[in-house]
Image (tube, rainbow, N blue to C red; front, side, top):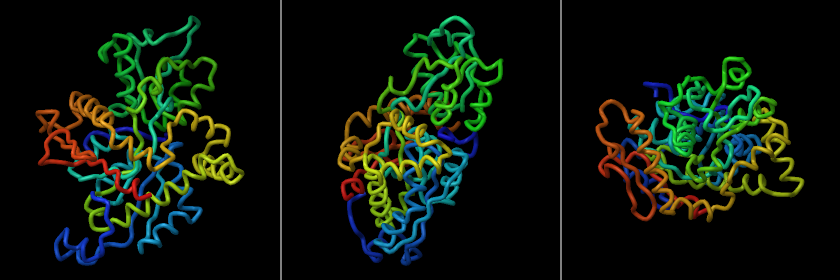
Length: 360
């Protein structure tokens, strides 16, 4: 993506159709007039391009009108900034990975609900080495600097790669590099290895000296791409969740279609992401889209998601992403469909809700 990570250091339901009066009962009298205008932040990544397409095509407005609200999808070139803006309260929702949803807004005290399980990275994230003559393998990471967005899914991927090669993070030197600069960095002679995501991966791998030695297809279902929204906003206006889910699955139906309309929609999404249609379609090959709402909901209910988030939270805690005050991996609570939880149940800050996908 032209972004996917952790915010830079320090900056970081129920299935129901509530009436305005019912929603107001969830809060104070000051909430008697629920807001009707919402903003969703998105950043460039193949699996999130349905949002700008939904905005420009009028599909998002059509679904928002159905629920008597207005929704604006706002694009960011900087993924980090999009999450920071959501966490600061400037947006009602944001496109984000599962790890970043936990380590930025949830850790920052923002009660957040994942309402759309969009996809998992199935090769979109990769560890890439530079050939210097002899063939290179994953074991050649040892002793090398690796440029990446630190404390992001790229570092998580690198950690899993090293683990598979019986290496540790202490066997490499991490060099914090903005996702916007990673492609240019790889061109320089001194850069020997990077960990990043698409579209940067595709761009770097066009170089004859670039070799992917590990990618997210080796850890399927662990790097998840979500749409999350503020839990309070959702509780006050459930129509927000239903409108977003309705628009999402209408666009996804086009996105995966083999028709001329589908081809045109993908071409529009490619243009919006700054890619060629061919490059965009190639990126889709390494994206495991949950194009059917029933499939997305089933994955969200799966015990595998709980296991994945347990692994992710342990990585995050061990890397200090829960903050200095956190003394245990259980500091931040997470809730899943069917009553499963992880962490402190009195401090639930990240929720996975399948009900809006069900309704779609």
